[in-house]
Image (cartoon, rainbow, N blue to C red):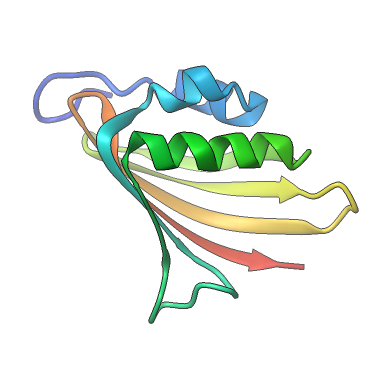
Length: 120
């Protein structure tokens, strides 16, 4: 889907990089100044986790990959400037995390990502 600038955000390629945890490719989908916000039990709405910039995002993606988790995306909805999807994360001990994620993009890159998590 093309955004307002005419750039294309390649959601299928993003999804492949995400679920295979190919950090090098996954990171290419984020703008240099992208912001990633997480709301979860340890980071409630009054103090969400904020990951800002490609360096911090790269460090976080490396942590995810090292965590030995299985990632699955479904129920995606893709528009011209944002997409939403459900992420299922299965931990090594079998517990699951479900996340609803909205990504905002411009010029074919994610500028903002907002995750809301629920844990087993």
